[in-house]
Length: 294
Image 1 (cartoon, rainbow, N blue to C red):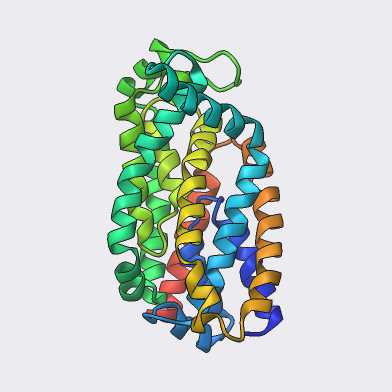
Image 2 (cartoon, rainbow, N blue to C red; image 1 turned 60 degrees about the horizontal axis):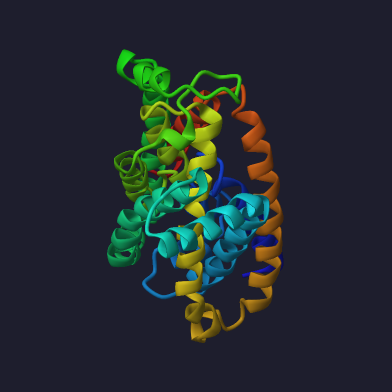
């Protein structure tokens, strides 16, 4: 892997991990479009330098999220330990701590058991193009579903008064809601399905507005991305990392900076806008890729 490849992939990873357009799908399709056959082959291999390289990018993305949401995470972590000491939930931060724990468990367990096998089977250009197209259709479906009367009723029952868009107060989410939104991220184990996108759709379906749906999806993603990266650090430090550790450092720096800019942009973007532009992009790029590689 060259340093140019590391920079390009780091940039795409940092942006697409948070944009609802699937980082895993782009990590398959972009190298194929650019003719980087060695990386395409390594993506779906059982053991490879590319998977070791991606470890550093995931860790960098998680760090960027932690830095951006540092104030929230400080309150959430303090709130978690307070609930252990007091054995009850009294504040919004304490409640959010347990919402994130409940939302993280399903995808964490399934990912631990099946992530590697799903990657080796489906991390191929044609499959990624199909799932990316499906991802776009799911984003369209999410925007349609949130307009249903049942979803509007959820928003009206616990209205938030901070964001300009009508929606449910994030603090009113129940533990069942968190489990539903968290479980939806399991679909992102397929290359082409966006973790943040599917979680946002889940949040919208439970009455959140776009900004709070995005915020909750980013908070949910942080421990998952960080744990996945740290769990596979031995891959980068072991034989698979030979020859790419320097590139991994450069790629991680680029990915971290890109992730920070991306989350800052998206939080502002979703104050007034929807998932529709990303849905259009996914369908168009997915169909073009399917025509090209199918």
